[in-house]
Length: 214
Figure (cartoon, helix red, strand yellow):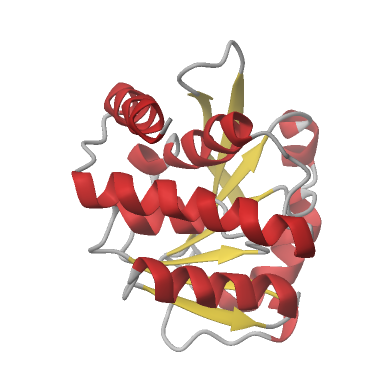
């Protein structure tokens, strides 16, 4: 099974444009192992089938990698570490901070960090509204977090002028964009295709509007 899972991951990643080495493949498989084990007690995800964990969580997370920018990224409301953990595994040169208010989930993330030897992630147990990053954030990533207006209200204090919000959305993206505050603009709306699936999702790219100096 492990070999077939590795083949699935390698093929899907290649389709996305990512080359995974043997260490990264092992880390992704071990992450799913841990997710399965801890899910029995902590209900980290509603998915129970191992194949679904790879297809719906791991591959979908990797699918946004080609579009992301910046070297210091925050995964807000990360839950079980999605998409932050798969992205951190495939991009060891990028620093990630995983933020969630649920202590059980962040304990799981700390175990994942230890077991996988991920030196490029920091885990924070905090409500994002009261969280202060150690240094300016280049990019904020959200997946199934909240509607766009609520998300921006929650993270506004961590978005500096050049920060970018990448919001993963499966539906209602157009309507949510209508509710953007006046100081924010959508600089891109991407249709992201997930290998192995017959439907795509939206990746909304949001940035603060440049201030006009009179």
